[in-house]
Length: 225
Image (cartoon, rainbow, N blue to C red; front, side):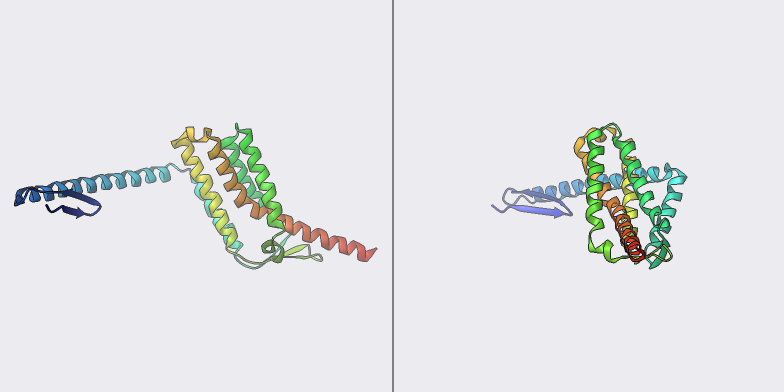
């Protein structure tokens, strides 16, 4: 007895008709087409629902969020070019990124001390590691005469800035959509590691800049002495 199998898209139907019963074969085809049409309708409705949900999220986003995004894009783009900046001015970006990360953690997990400790500990540890890496050490030069830093341009800060913004935006949306998720310690620790990892680059680069500045001033004092 032959096994008949028909497939349309992802839908399939298998059956063994009685010998010579072509009516059962035709009926199987009709059933499969009917199921396939129902599947297309479900997929279409699901897509329309997702688009409508996304439109509602974007339309309900406050205007200041888009202004913040524009400012962050401009700030990130400025990091892609070689530049010379005052030491104090170089601290603006790390402070902004640290502020966004800490704001997200405090607003979402302010009542979970363990999560906040995990975020702070991870941030400090990763920042120290980043400050000693070749990426930050080789990309920073200090001019003691003008108290300026010579920084190499890179697209990495732009990527990290956008990742922090997207993470903060996503957490805000999820907090309204599924508040119970933020009561789970595992989710809180995952968010803590996410923001700590991204923010540590900026803080680590500032620590490396501070080290360059301190070493130069120490050498200057020894020369004068």
